Amino acid sequence: MATIIVYAILLILITPPLGAFMYRVYTRERYGRIENVIYRVIGVDPTLEQSWRRYATGVLWFSVIGMLLLYALLRLQSSLPLNPTDMPAVDKYVAFNTASSFVTNTNWQAYGGEFTMSYLSQMLGLTFQNFVSAAVGMAVLVAMIRGFTRNKREELGNFWRDLVRGTVYILLPLAAI
Image (cartoon, rainbow, N blue to C red):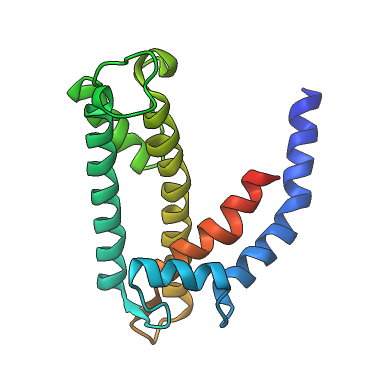
């Protein structure tokens, strides 16, 4: 019981500064070096605002492509590197379930990780999806808030900018801490 109380108090204490930091991350006008490199690599202009349709399309395409790539990685793991215990390909149903659950950030697992997934599948596929699916969720929340506050405008921001900023400036530093 004491652990729960301490955890709740710490959460309450960290919420205002973390919320203020996240606000600054998503609303600042200038772009960092790492950010600019990522935008150049993925071919995105972060200054362009997107309508809700364009924003939603970016979210959906990013999620669908991420799910397909993770599914393919799991199904092909037997012939990929970083598989020292010669794990076979993940069953098609388990691979689909895993890919869809990690892309939607529910992370429901119907397998024993060390008995089913190769190192590459866990490191590249699952860890990557843990980060980007959380960043997608944060971007969608930020877009929803913008939709409420910008009730006279069509634009909700830029999905790619929100995704990159959430990953680079919020999730990666929190993971390092």
